[in-house]
Length: 388
Image 1 (cartoon, one colour):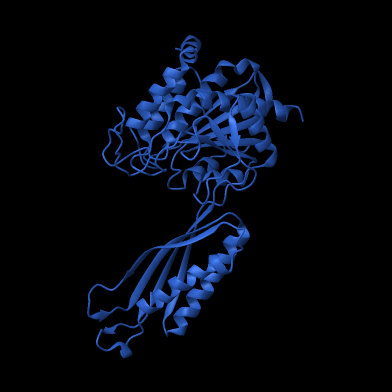
Image 2 (tube, rainbow, N blue to C red):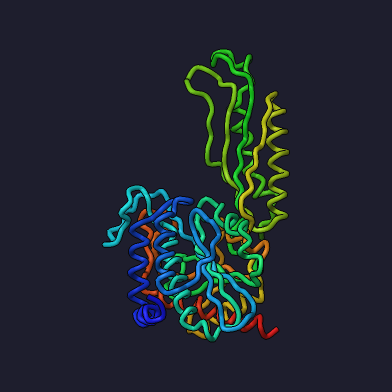
């Protein structure tokens, strides 16, 4: 196999990519467990002599296409993991793995970027520079990007592009904007300590449920009264625990939730106000409380120059382009953008159920169109950097 195999694939690329997409969809794997997915991708790439960089990753891989001459280096990233969701579609290629599903479209991302790799490989003699292609594990657990970065494989990369789909855009529409495309994601825990007692003797208690209730209500004022109405931010309490029976005031309570922000100033302000409210409220009622803060990825941050080029390439290929963000969803592509300029690009896949829904579906007929787009974007980016 090799050049002839590649030319055959490219000639029948639409059917090839749809077939790959179906197989990936049928065999979803959870974050950091994408062993068969990685093996399948490795085989598809090696069959047409595409170089795979040896990074000693447990799952995921980085391939590269080298042009005819030395030049800049760009990267394209897609993600490969699935979700612990039981699929409820009636697709003929629905998941074969009970309790697992590609409900966020990472199978679609892989098929698109694989197609772009084939096209770039076919045209490698005309490229000046190098394209590194990241098939990243563990996006859903938000630790996959860090694992790729830690290998050092991106240390020489000048620009990076990422793909995500959305059912909020029609098929064939590209969404992109300068600045934040997704939110910073933080998780918080609050541990509250009071004094337990018999329910008939509340005066002997410091009721942690009362403290927790007041903390929760006060936390909801942070976004409405401390964050500008022109900013997008979110604080949601999603988990409460306290007590285990009907006639005992418990000793402790537990609260868990998430904060989503689009800029660091709002992120820092919310953290500050949460500490003030939690400590002040617990002391007011005679108890104590502790905030445990788990920072995850920051907001993605698209660079204006590369957004402009993304739009130019899209229009040259007759795509409709809309200014759009993913709202307050999180995305660990942000870790790459802390080090490398670039753009996170949203691809319309037709109206469907939302991401992470068991009936989520994708219009497979646009896979090839987007593959051509990302191949062209890579080529134009190399030219753009070389002409500086």
